[in-house]
Image 1 (cartoon, rainbow, N blue to C red):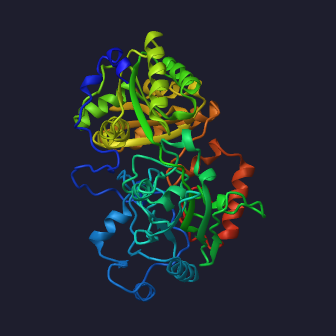
Image 2 (cartoon, rainbow, N blue to C red):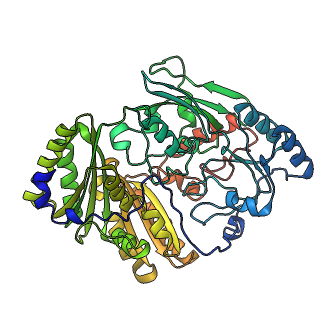
Image 3 (cartoon, rainbow, N blue to C red):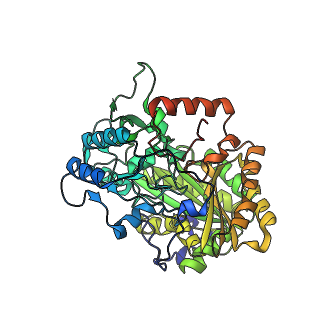
Length: 513
């Protein structure tokens, strides 16, 4: 990229102190007790489920023999009961750690017979309270279900257990010249089963599409303990209903995913990242339009951050801005099979952006350490926001022409009552991450935000959840994005597949009653 380096005035000062892209967020915070969800939401009513007793613990220990597989220690339970954002906390008395599908089946059969409510939990990195108990549900953790079963090096089809950590899968695949079709900031902690259950999007969706297209098969255990084997590794199978699609995005309410067959693309031979500054969001959209035209098939990610986002990175994480200060920043990634070809295309694209003044400044990274450094600016955003105190997180899809208007409207609506309103996200697929921070949680602030934000999104024909799911926090707002008839059908499917309602209750869809 030497021919454009003079145009990229800050390119020489890309800092090397950024953290590696693969690590998950580790925040040094004071250990404060998180308020119990049932206390924070006093109108919640516990469902008609049994309470765990000593006999249940004894039976669980028989079903899961061995040390550390049935956890009842109060100190150990806290991490499983509390979500990553420290906004939801349940009071489960037991965590179960199966290793096999057969063990999951036995546990669910027992819990269903006893009417014990269950929460499936992977890496517990969810942001809508979907992976932790609301009351005292039994937690079934997939931590020990972490085996890679097979990789077909001709087709690129990976079969693995649901508890495999996303970063570990990606590392394994790279050793075999493949890569995961999914990538997100929590990759160092999140489990593939949780990714599938929430239909996670991430930064590679622009290039590889959603999980609905890259998952070829699933093995799932129903509430009754029945194992549904749809673990096909065929690209084409047009025999009957495509049942696996029911479980992708079902957030653990229809069954527990135990195995997956994933179609993995070839690892790109060449990756480049550009970090650019723009004067307006309209110019961000112009650059996106030009990038699709000029970069075409090598464009793999197009992310944006606003100035408030960069302020979080600089002040809360003490990281440096790799370029000058601008109202908006763009991160573009290209990946392909021919380094010279990709470099030439990116070079021409950046020269055009600078000469037409759509972009005012930028820096380019071509070696992996600097690529990871640039990505960390975007991927450590969630970590940085946590340092403000409490973060109200929203993940919406909107038409691109209305994309940033929501951020501006929320700033006007909330004014000085909040610490900051931050907008960043995936321009490539119309996914905005809107974050509002305050020193501590406030019912008054929550009432100002909700349902205002959901009404706004519905009015502009968006979705109230682009990739995080509905979980506990957004369940009651589903009608802002789905019709009554659609929700009624979902409720009927839930009743059919989980008649006793033991799987992840209080989440995702309203009760039929």
